[in-house]
Length: 256
Ligand code: ADP
Ligand code: MG
Image 1 (cartoon, rainbow, N blue to C red):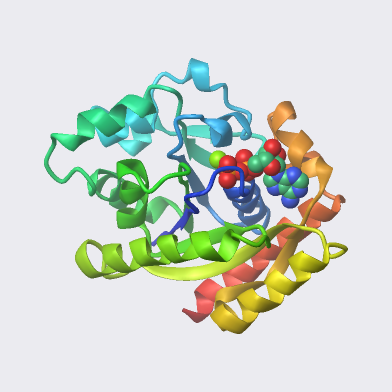
Image 2: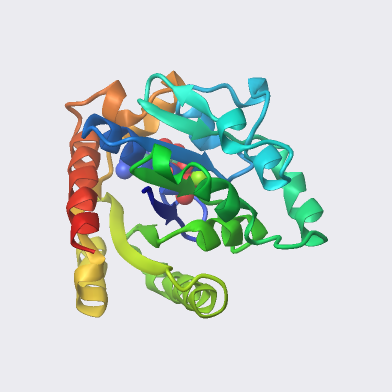
């Protein structure tokens, strides 16, 4: 049965989508069956998987509104080696349409349960907010992976996310836990980043993943070629880090 993980952080531009896409491709390279769910109306994870978001016949929007099942709406990312439930601007409307519906925060969970046997991992790329879309992600998941830049205000933002996760755990999803914090866009030459990295480890202990993803321009270039970085340039430092992260996650999940 699939393990379902959200990649979440309410800040934008912290590396959520880059993490989701490269982790999905890294897990696929490790022989895992992966479904990636793009829950951000920007559709960056969709485009970064080599799927044109404007050409999607069905998307996660249709799944949330229960007008399509996951098997009907998923497409294959040939580049990434995983299945994808894509997103585009249409998804922005789902927020408003869901508010008045029953089980509005449990829609994705129900849909994913129907395909849990098809996958080893389901990865959900969340939007940069604690919205109803993110809530659907958190209600579907066993755990949350939090990508974080080691910057001064990063720790402050983290407490909001941790509180949200606690509330969802208490009220909506008893399975939910923080799987780990992933340090991304890391530059060891910047003293502050090394200091924040140490603070993170002191505060969160083994909830901080061992793998550190460096700042690496190849990871930023890959989406414009419609490819995950780990496929676009496998020998780049960023790609090597994400492949190592995928392996670390497989080990951690086996020990859970
Ligand atoms: P989010 O999904 O949290 O908004 P993204 O994954 O889209 O964040 O990343 C924001 C920007 O930073 C993008 O332009 C992306 O290409 C770039 N980026 C992400 N991770 C790295 C990295 N490790 N090295 C260099 N650039 C990165
Ligand atoms: Mg994103």
